[in-house]
Length: 390
Image (tube, rainbow, N blue to C red):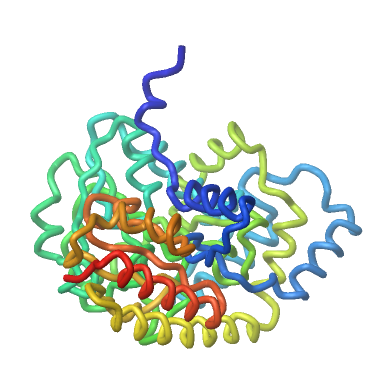
């Protein structure tokens, strides 16, 4: 007998598809992996060296639930500098990965029956957590014709007296789209006087190909309402290190810290020290990685747009291409399955990211150009052999 709430808990399809792909590889099938959302680069050496130094220096015991003071100060300084705001360590909670900064603030602020507006399509854990808490998920559709940005008028139509949280993600997974400064200013005007919190997922803020990154927290009156979610996984190729953080008002930070105490005790302390060095050290590896992602983006977008029935916007950030396949006589879910089983290309159906992803596929171009070109060739051959045309 299990708790009824477990029926409301979702998952990440990327890991399920990865498991299927690994099973096919074990049977001898060659698979190009474009499904999983993690950089294919090594963690920079100076960060690894910092972790080893911390281990040898005795950072092997419990730390404060909110994070090591010096790490929180470093994060506060970094976020203050990059968002043009003034934060202190009292605003920062360090967590094992960034997902707790989705779950814990919602858990601290949202009651059953409250409404939470979240982007659609989007990272599936947003909706999963809202459902799990017994709140009402309210999808905000991100449309291709709007470059997958937020339609402020549509957002305004969704806000009610029960709205307690608004989730934003820019640059975005899975679309690669972003919210421009003008749209953020309009959103700020819309929510400034409302009794709600904003979760601003900025995990891809450093992986941006055009323009500057803007945080809604930087607009007048929004700092206290906004929880900035960020971390080290994407920027520094540290997915397996599990290191994220949230920046929020001190009262909420205290509640999130208590949730950390009750769930994880603390975040790995030698990993925190390595993360501190990541922010303080040279950023050349980040710049190199982003430049390579840009090259790959251009290759995959051009290639996808040459495939019959595919139509792909050029992503502004992150490392995902999100082409429409709605003109093909096959569902996106079936197409993604067939590409894995028959073509040896692992990708995700847009439906893995919500109802708004129906008719789309997501390709992670965190793979070599050689493998991206191989995948494009395989997709083209599959479409021809299957007779799939618009």
